[in-house]
Image 1 (cartoon, rainbow, N blue to C red):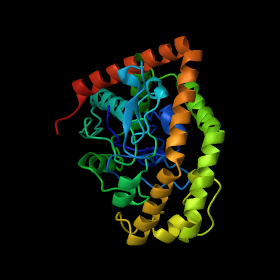
Image 2 (cartoon, rainbow, N blue to C red):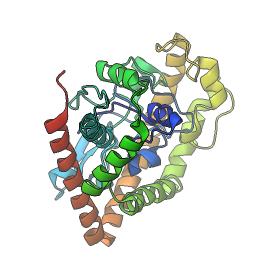
Image 3 (tube, helix red, strand yellow):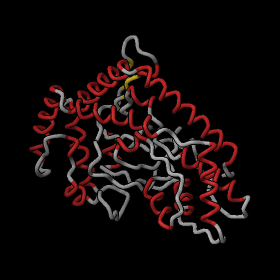
Length: 324
């Protein structure tokens, strides 16, 4: 699935009048620490981990097609065990709510969403922030890209205020019934995978080969005049530098300045020339592969549950979505 329609910012606004939406935040979303949309007005997160690297991919000897290395997309073995980073789960539930509320003559105008729209160029399908030379040249450090038709339609929907009497009671009854028939994904399963991903990220960043590459990255960055260089590439750019570059909210434009592109390109060049991106990616890949083998049966169960849920969600959307 490749939808990135409604992010958590819009969902938060929708809940402000005790209208509790069926918001499902996947585990990978929480691990990534960001809430992107496809070509949407997501916000740059100074705390997000930048992932860089050359656009290359390869398959390890003896591995399956699902184990293809792709550093440009930062694809990793645990991706298949986590719910895809998307709004499909929420979209499906909103459609069921619209159908249920219509029986009470209550309008709930869930808009059409393009569920096949390509993913954002600055996030992968697992919700990880991407960063390489090509991204730096086009977008600088930005994630607040131009909104798509789907995101604009959803933005309009989240401002809708129901006027019918008895709405809240009907909404609560519908939501309770829908979640009994279509239970939300297991939080424990999501936490199992996201905790594992987070632990491996920390372990990989502290490994000798990655630390050595981080030293080389600092040596590459220090002469360039971008202020104090942090110990880890994941801590650059600082929130102060992002503000200086105009790449922190409130945004005045979605287009990066020449200066922002200059800094971003230098950062991407140093990530590659130091070998940091490659070292981090390979270390994460190895550690994730080992973790899967240690808990294969349990993770296979989680993956089967995720895939079953995604099939059900797509079936709900196909049966209930409005026309474009």
